Amino acid sequence: MIDDATIIGRMEYGGHGERTGAGMSLEGIHHVTAITADAQDNIDFYAGVLGLRLVKKTVNQDDPTVYHLFFSDEQGRAGSDITFFEFPNAPRGRAGAGMVHAIVWRVGSAAALDFWAERLRDEGIEVERGADSLRFADPEGLAHELRISDVGDEPLVAEHPEIPAEHALQGFDAVRAYTADPEASAGLLEALGFGGGAGDWEARGEARGGWVHYDAPPEHRGMQGAGTVHHVAWASTPEEHEAWRERAIAGGARPTPVIDRFYFKSIYFREPSGVLFEIATLGPGFDVDEPLEHLGEKLSLPPDYEHLRERVEANLKPVSSPRQRVG
Ligand code: ZN
Image 1 (spheres, rainbow, N blue to C red):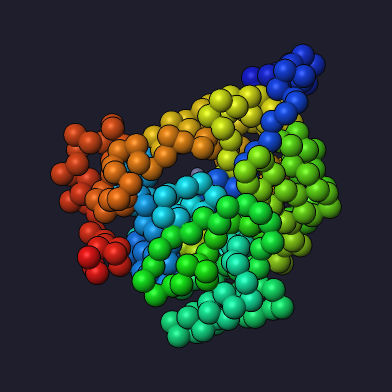
Image 2 (cartoon, rainbow, N blue to C red):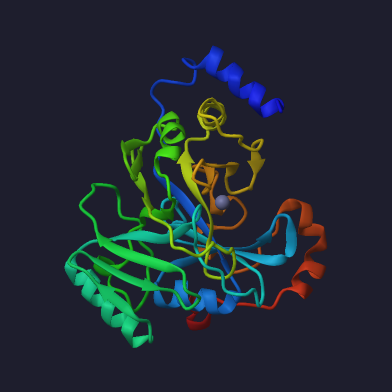
């Protein structure tokens, strides 16, 4: 069957390859979005234990009864932004083929790994220490890995009274995804300017880089649920966003139209291994609807829902961040 996307894809291959070709590169990982069954527990772990800043408390644009929480560095910058949709009481999921199964963060030193090993153990979290890494899972089973980083990218750090700045998380290094056939993704990743090969690919821009590593999948099928990643977003300048959409099409993907997420603009498509990719713009950013000093303190609503605020708020269980409780 030939549909519009197929035809547009062929046209792009045949005609406009050069126009969108040279000089563009994605600026690493923009954000990673996962699912939680409990917004308050999620805030307590990511802001309280991991020391990220809750930079936006909003709702799912398609379902305003559901929280969408964003945690990031102090300025709410892309590259350190992990977000969660809350589906209250959702059953645990598990990662399988075509899903991201672990999130890799940068830290500054072996001393930072020691610090986190102790801090996480004190919270009752099991950790696995490697020579230059520390693995653990959040309370819902979402896997994380901290790695000592020697890349020159600016560390993206949040402030937390119990976490010395030199030990804080410094933003994303990579996502790890499951696939039986990483080669299947090579063509599209090359079209999107990723460098690498085999199972390891990096999107490196002028300021930042980020990797996707592919690992052999487990026997069981994946199940989206609490503690699983929904998608990974790669960062684009606002000016190049439309051109990335064309490039994705030229690479064989079928991206959505550009969707306005208010804090950034987005397109989505599945890469051939099955992982849901997004390309999101660097800006306008989380301070577009509230001042930087007060990010995440009150419920932010998309413009379409603002007139329904009372009803939306009545449907959501109130949550607070550790900063609000201290301050
Ligand atoms: Zn996203």
